[in-house]
Image 1: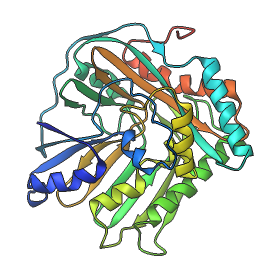
Image 2 (image 1 turned 180 degrees about the vertical axis):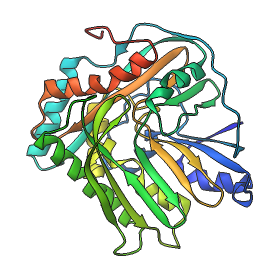
Image 3 (image 1 turned 135 degrees about the vertical axis):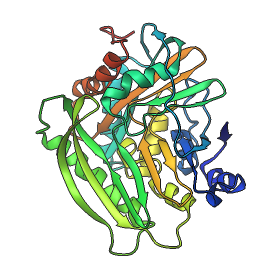
Image 4 (image 1 turned 60 degrees about the vertical axis):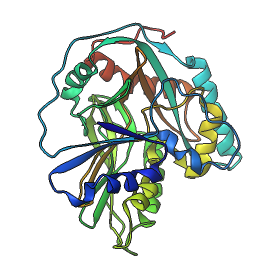
Length: 343
């Protein structure tokens, strides 16, 4: 059974009430939506409407060892975008204007695609498996399913050791990332992630053993970093998740100012994307993917969100293309490629 919750703060008490932390033979499969971060925003600007009905937070307690989910056939219709390429480019310019004013210095902008869907969502997970997602198992609830191909680690905890691996910088597979703009974007987010972990870390323990490392992930070339720290003994699960959510690589810098601007500019909510999906163990260990490259199936439709970080020297046309670079391997994998142009 999948339990739906209204806020991130409800997750740890709900797991405790289920006796989860007293067991050693189960794991909690957990989803946290980007919408859980609405409480952090400072402005009164309403959050954009969600394109599909999903819970804010959900979890399912499952046996530690569980058989693979069987997959069936599915069909995907034509893709439709929530905003046009020119509207997305205008939003890039709006972020650059905010940077010029000193309000922010990086903001992540996200496009949304939707298509009619019929069939078995588990079939999507089977099709995406060759892209080696961090959390390949779908999470399903009442009328919805989340299927992720994310290669980005939001949070790992093993004992007192915590780690995150932000991704910034993207090119098609086989093409090196050799741009000063991408390097600057990457270093900004690593600095933000250092600050996030420092909120819950032992003083002086935050380090970054990897920076600007080029890897082939989810069908594209990325720049990846690793930031790690020693967790303080007094930190609760809720405090740990609060420190890292929403992920810096899908918000911007400063994070709260970026959240406000995102709500102002994006035409629809981020749904299943830009949150977290993964596993929490009774001993406190955690494995959460950041839900980039993540689909939602709900109300007879398939949804996907893709985007990228905008900095001062971003070119609007190049940012539009970067979002499609990220989408194309996913849509090719599920047999539903983009038409050109997307309506």
